[in-house]
Image 1 (spheres, rainbow, N blue to C red):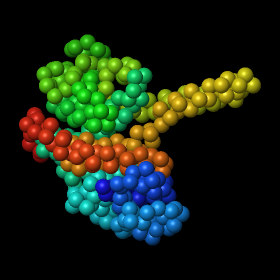
Image 2: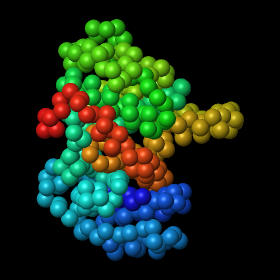
Image 3: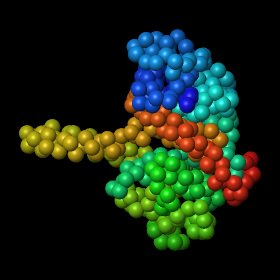
Image 4: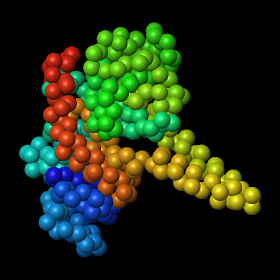
Length: 338
């Protein structure tokens, strides 16, 4: 299985991207990584490691889409950017999937331009995985579509259900619609209409509305929202977790007993930190794109890149795009140019 990796994408590229690729090779025997980017910089990083040279390829790409570049402008003008070349390898079939920690907006734009959408999909969505009391949940969309129609949310539920099944092996996962109340009829016009569509969607196990404060109780498996709301929930959760850990660290250091208590709680705190660590989940899939395009966190360490490559490899091995295409056949809004 060949996975194309944007070696120049992310805050710590190519240092962490190359390191993550080498680590992934150690855990997946069937994996070959195509490192896409400035050849001399990639080769310099590779000198640090011992690895199977038959399982790493370098595709030279001279330009880099920076984090602060305007997404669409960068995608259209930087033809030889590592991100663009990475996706072209997927389009041509030379790679079965792709991973980038680069500019999110640019990757959304480039993925749609290069790979297009699965037939029947009105809009692709960005998925992310949240921890909960009872396991993991999938939240989507978290940023691809700030403005949504009810039909988009309905399709997100269908795609998200298949994604959850692929990731966690759970058939018929429970789907909730993110809303300001749990009662039917709550919310704005879009969520009310989406509720009715979801209620009649035979492809999903829709259990009703869910409030953001109840998401992590684990009573649903897939949470559907528009990209604006989903992104706000994601960043609020990340900020809250960061705040709690910073307060704990500050308070623990204030007293001897605090330090003793922290020592006793260390295994639990470590487990909690790992559960909230985004690098554990291997990045976000652009769901609905006709190819596997995974966005790793911009500040990904080698561990985050490694896990993103592992997720990409799994989805490619299981021919997830073929399964999604089959599910979306005849879906509402079958015109791919909608």
